[in-house]
Length: 131
Figure 1 (cartoon, rainbow, N blue to C red):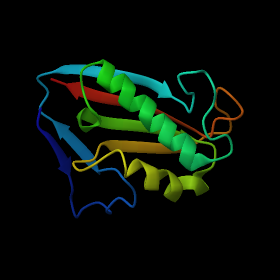
Figure 2: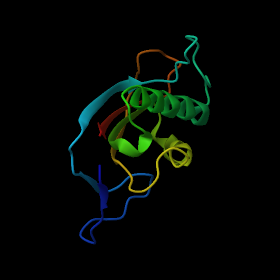
Figure 3: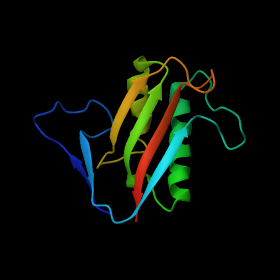
Figure 4: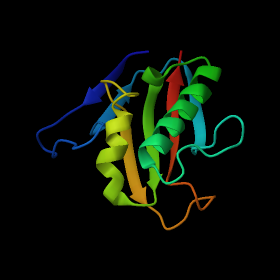
């Protein structure tokens, strides 16, 4: 499945680990990954109070869901990121860069006042096209 990162001088270059847009020549299956949190397989919450460690666990959870559907993180074309503190943007993208490579998925990040558990600092949902 060819995935292309879109870049145009008509828009400001992204300052994080995402593209302005992503084009997918879709001949595969769409995989919609529900919002993943820092919940570990044993039920505990990883990295309480540590946004980097929570982001790492969230990315691992997204990766596991996509792999269970027969794909890889390279198949992810869009992520939506919900954070408790937008000041953590650079820390989050430091970890995201370890999971997502070019061509990067399109992305939206928004700050929210609450997530499903008071210890959650980040949640990510994703869309992938798996061939």
